Structure formats: structure tokens, C-alpha cells
Image (cartoon, rainbow, N blue to C red; front, side):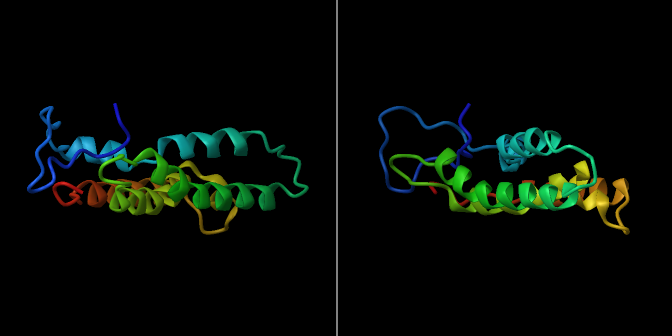
Length: 139
């Protein structure tokens, strides 16, 4: 399965093989999740010792690095040789990443206002709204 959301054929283009059907809501929802970057964040943040010395700073640095890497990775993951990257998917995955970390806890859990349910509720609503976004056909 490709990371790129299938949007159907580009208007006016003839393609030898039949194009895959456009993604439905659940397909788009799954592909807007930057799963590989969330996994990278979990692995890297899990390696940080919880000894108090620089723990919070390291978690924020890992979060920032992963957030910066999200559009870079998604640009390559969504690239199609004939269409280029799907920039809308890159943007929406980049927006989704901090909400995944907020739901996980991450460095946000160290803030006085943080409650786990806040991140979970925010993630549910953001994911629902992002899943409703459809890229233009042929993009």
C-alpha cells in the first residue's frame, strides 16, 4: 500500500493501466497519520532517561525534530513520478503530528495544564476533520 492518497486519474490524461479508485474517508484518515514519524518520536523519546536532568528539554527537542521531519518525509512518501508529491497530504500530516504527540503525552505531559483526555479529545476531532478533506482529483 502506498502512502500517497489515490485521487483518481488526472483530467484529460490517458493511463494504460486502470487507475486505483479514490480513497474513501477511512483510507484518507489512515494516510493523513504520519505513522512512521510518530513511531520515530516514540522510539526516540522512550530512550530519554527520566532522571530529571535535561529530560524535559530533550523531549521538546525530539518533538521539534520529528515535527520538522514530518513534511520532509511525507514529501518523499507521497511522491509520484508523474504527479509529484501530494502537498495537501504533506500539510495535513504535518498538522496531525503534534496532536498525536499531545494524545500520547510527550513533553506536553510535563506542563501543568495537561490532562490526558485533552489530547485524546483534540486528536479525535482533528483526525475526523482531516479525514473529511479530499485532495482534488488527479493531484
